[in-house]
Length: 436
Image 1 (cartoon, one colour):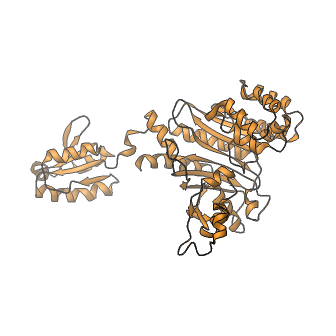
Image 2: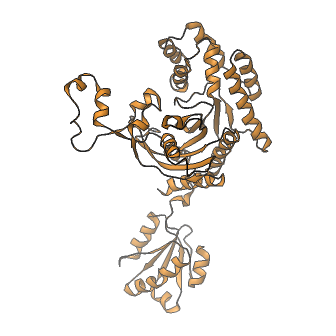
Image 3: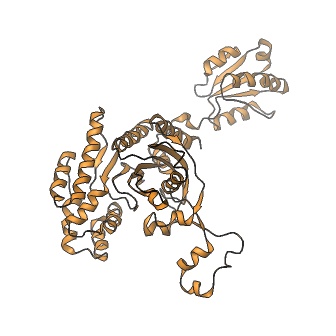
């Protein structure tokens, strides 16, 4: 938890610096709120909660024969939240008369997915979301790039890429290759490009009735190696026949221009025109962050959604947001050895003693150390000094304050630095000053 809080405090501080306020929503949502927002694969991964009491009372033989979808709605009305964005959309709609728009919020809570647990993929994990709703301004997209950079910089990560694309470009690509209206299937397939490779993606597209010549037209995009300007120029040519595609290119250009005008460089920003992100509610910019040369996948992702609140009866509410996967960031920092040593240090000084007299003397000092803001504890049992020192060492407590007869008589404390082994008798005021 100490290491996790190091990550959470870093993220929280950055969100607050950019003007975001914190909210929380319940772990359980109505299934009607959750289903149909994450695509078919997402719906499969929702944890459903059985109705309390006799949950089978409304189920008859015919329902059972018609399969689980028919039965599900009668035995389960609630589910555990799959992400923080959909509950946030519900929250905005329910509180629309009390919120000031544009509304900037962040949320740090666990989410649940009925997935097979493996490294970097968990059934329960924390997400840290930041979203802005009620504005179309591309300043929000630019600031997301800056927030991601700020957090990763503070976590001492120096080798990563912020992949950036636009869903309108993917819609344009499906039009340009002659498969208009199939952008959903296209996105689901190419979202797996990193995991299964181009050949398998081609097979999946064929299964979704993409013509062979359409699939071959995608090849230049998959293999494109170029800088930002060259990629944008290539896209303008490739998407010349698609109005929506060109709009996506223009939006990407504007985001990069805003960053430049803010005096920011484009370090770590990678225009990835094959980035899809499988979730079905994105309509504009999409982000994904990968730390290079580690065994974990993406550590952050998000995008622009034009009408997420429309599902709850409030149309035309545009928003953009992104999320950090805390558990994945934890794994990355652990793999790279980037946690600061003091991130797990709970106590600064342990007061030790040889007998009851020293214990009582330590009790008097304990309050004074804590009053000065120094994390301190007194060894609770009367035992050998060796055992007390071992305790301090195992807990990574850097200092020990020894309360012996000599120290009691002189009204001082013997302060021992466990790392260097040096020991010196000092007054309480001096001990406090040094530990601070």
